[in-house]
Length: 307
Image (cartoon, rainbow, N blue to C red; front, side, top):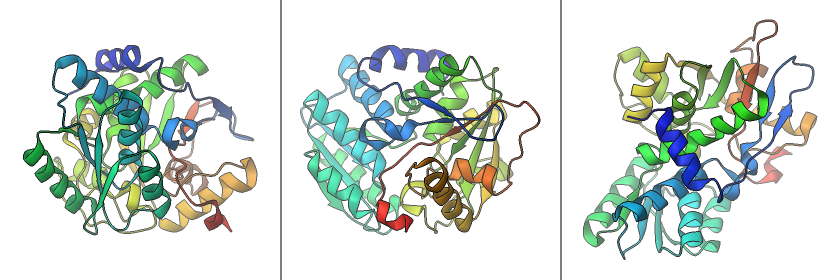
């Protein structure tokens, strides 16, 4: 699967192409900090994995003249479109019809060919796979690929350097690429806790079953956290490193998102508010002196929906 060595290799590969996003102390919370990854290129952590994937494919000779194809609820597609544009590679992105109009608009702005199909990620994924077979393009999986996950994990390397070390990292989970990368990067040094909405609990149910399983998908964060099944990489890394999963309600996501705006003037999407919701809803209570990092991983949203 992936290890700290893979994350370090990704950091070396993409270091000059990504933003080193800042950390911010969480007011009245002791040693807790936010990792402001929503300030990354494209508005999410996914730019890290997309750049790592395409650059590594070019290095290995895997990248073809047909360019890259991705399937995404929006954010992963935006990241692949951005990375492809930066590297001069054609990109074709398949997204579900439920994807945020803001995200679809951004894909077009980045010069990608956009195909909207199906009501869930799984349907867009199937269409993208067929396109890869037909054209020979390089597929950029949104989360279940070693280079995507390792690239995402580079934010944890930064976090460790910026803080001098943390005890616990709270991370939103959809398909699990970010969780896998962060857990691999911090293995043996910090605990990583995945936070999922009750309507998209792929990691939670996989850990309970002892294997990845299909789950129903619904709720306010379904466009970004709506993977029907957690990735094999995320599941294996989570099991190897002892990752826990916490569940929050949709109302918790909405409240945490509003809290971030009211108290910090931070605007994130519902999915990115999941990590914060673990604290504001009481799903996770840090011990005295515990150094907790809350990863705010995406901001591709309509600020008007905060009203």
